Amino acid sequence: MANPSDELIQLYRVAVEAQTKPTSEPYTEEGWAPWLEAAEAFQRAVTAEAEATETGRGKLEQAVKKIVLWPEADAG
Image (cartoon, rainbow, N blue to C red; front, side):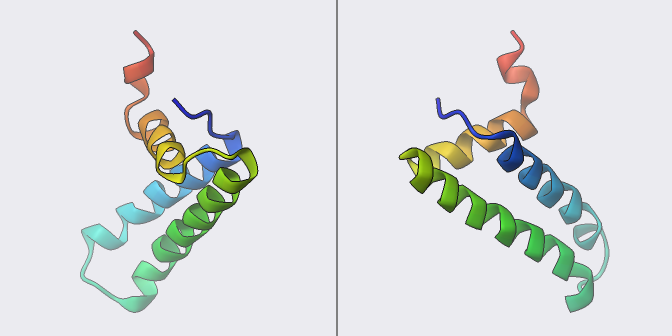
């Protein structure tokens, strides 16, 4: 499994948190902007880190999502 940086993990956590509000309310461009910006920042960071570490982009993104969304998967 890929070994993502703490910064990449934190960027994804911010994106996940930013998703909560706009998806629970009626759509507005202003309401979705923080989530879209956080998601774009995460995607740019994934691409940069994948290139810098010569790790597959998909594997790196998958590792981050597993750590953030399913932390108990590695606990046992």
